[in-house]
Image 1 (spheres, rainbow over the protein chains, first blue to last red):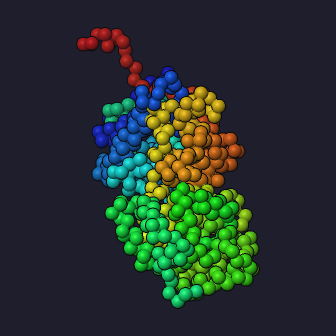
Image 2: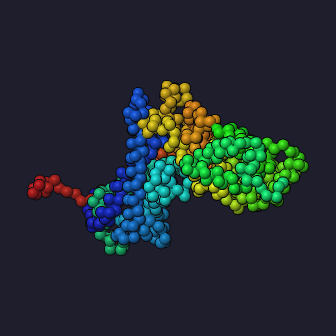
Image 3: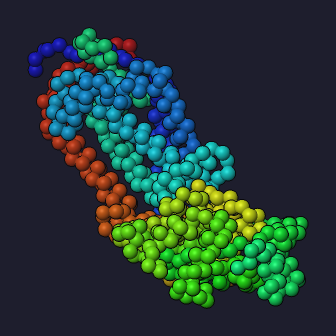
Length: 232
Length: 374
């Protein structure tokens, strides 16, 4: 073993508290939404010995779905706002690849992730450009799921907020089609979660910069030499 | 034809009905449009003074189930009187004249009563191949529709065919069957259903006659009085839904107990209609009460939302049995398998990188540690 120099890392405060709060609220509500939504689509057999007045479990499942949906939606709005006022890593420019540099990094990350090449260049300490772009796509999915979800919910509600979404129904032709699409997009979330969780662990492992714990404490690590070469 | 159109009352009395019959009719009409008792004099007054509007009832691509439904209205007096007393000048199914005479009475009505007649349309219009798929008296359905709609005081689209195309508009729609509201630039009152409920049909007509205005319509052109609520929300089996008590198959114990039909494909949660309130055939029953799920016949494109007995529509391009869940499960499992394979491959392919990272890490001497404060 050669006695080459050890890497020196600096601590970078990447994820501010609102970003971390957003992330975990999002994680919890999406999980609840998937579980309750899956049950609403395919109710399981439960307590079949009773009369209707003795139980309300399916109503409760729907209630959880609706409450989680409200939290999910307003949490999403806060995140959109934070994209304009947050720190450099929270800004919208991370999510929409408009710069040549971002496209180059997308290519680089694809090589590291899919072709399993070794990272030759340093990756952004915030979202890497590919991750940022995928999160942008998830934001579009969030918007779609919110529109279709509240449109479906509007038939259940007389309050003004869901009524703002009634215009969505005729665009799809009817509730059945809206429901179908709302259901299809649930699978996007499921597949996203599988890949997202894996890639967090993967990047933590190959980058060694605390990717996983960064969403808890907000800290990531940047090599001394990289910090000198780059300014973001 | 007389110079001046008779009022409704004159028309009714000329058919031999007494004043008592007339008042009974007015009361029924008031009840149908949801007026309270104090509203009856208003109806009487309207019918004594307003001229009796002539009606043209056109039939295009349809099965006549709307007409069949209509003549089975719950309140016989309403149906009778509407038929007797509306001047039903042209309707292929029920009129006495035929051939040239029939065409003449149609022409007479649209010219003499321009701007005053009510146009009722049953069936969609084939817009493909210059409309050859539906010709009446040598003219295409679309030509007749455009001519009749031009001077109509109000246009009602009866049933799912006229409102959203129904079965002939289902994929691949060979005749390019088109609902009425997409062809004319006038407001159309859509009364969907295959067929619509008879009492809903009489209700819509009565509203036009009593108030002389179109009823409140929703964003899809349907009268809100009858189409603003889901079958699901007005269903007497709804408590079973909230309790999570479902029929699993049509021959099980739960079906016998009358549990919710959601899991066997009931479309009640996505269908807007008055079935569960008004019910059918004089309030006798409606599909769910008879043990069969709603098939959503009043919804846009309901033939393409099949199969009727599963709750999710089949996923296009993957065969009739595969729903979004089948496809989603395959993709989800694929992702999980891919991720596992990736994790294994990473440790093999990236040996050198991992070794480098390990070399970079600082070695901590255990002895030093123990010698410290800890």
